[in-house]
Amino acid sequence: MKVLWNDQIVDESEVKIDLEDRGYQFGDGIYEVIRIYDGYFYMEKEHLDRLWTSAEKIRLTLPFTRTELSQRLHRLAAEVGLANARIYFQVTRGTAKPRLHDFPDSAEVTPVLLADIQPATRPASKQNIGIQAGFVEDKRWLHCDIKSISLLGNLLALDEANQKGYDEAVLVRDGNVTEASASNLWMVSGGVLYTHPDGNLILPGIAKLKIRQLAKVLGIELREETFTKKELLAAEECFKTSSVAEIMPIVEIDDQTIGDGMPGPVTKKLLAAYIEAIELAVQAHQNEK
Ligand SMILES: Cc1ncc(COP(=O)(O)O)c(C=O)c1O
Image (cartoon, rainbow, N blue to C red; front, top):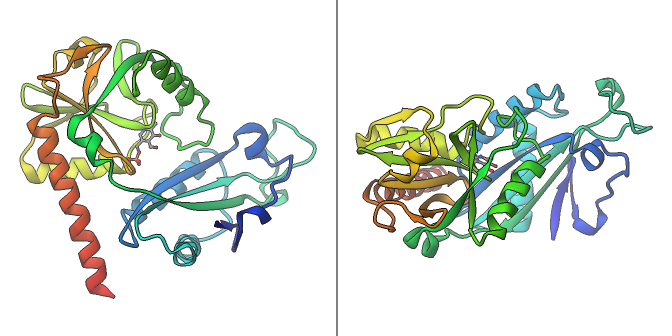
């Protein structure tokens, strides 16, 4: 499989990562995942904006412009040739020897870019029936707004839920629901759509941005406010969102049914609109060519 390594497209076996790359040793890096539909990078600009925001927050100077990064990612996509896929790309701070916790001087270290593309398909059968989740205490750090490659807190939460037989973790901090292990979390209560406000306790999702727009168009009232476990269990509907899973209904939490245990009408309406928005964007892109 071909991958992007800095500014080169190489076979993955040719990539050499230094033992003292700070990403490898400290998880000192950031990443993004963009969903590609029929060759079109969906919401690319928003993902690149978030990468730059994450870089600023960890005081990392990216060694390329947005245009250069975009061109490299598209070059890889053309080389790999998968129409429906997801592209993962990460930037680590690079190699600094010897291993020291202190950030190296940015003039002395070159960040390392890596990207790979894997096939992706809409998880339609799961979207039709929903998934089961369990509550897990949110013990992650207080910079959840940074899309950091240090995901151990998220992985531990997911594993705790998996060990209890659930597909996903619904994270709870100080009694409030924050998000899921790799998705934003939503509930419909009294016909109103709720999700945790942006800030340092959640990742500002790109799918979340789209849901905001769609809720407005569909006339669904949206309140970005905190809510509790109890309020979520009493809700009519619950779902999570991410660029790869799109909108995924959650029909049970801690073995308690949400609503009637099936994806609800607001979730279905948003999912249909989400898919339509993708199709329109792909079409507009093809018409431009
Ligand atoms: C913790 C977390 N929250 C939310 C999201 C959803 O983000 P997006 O909609 O940009 O995929 C992700 C995606 O990886 C995530 O890891």
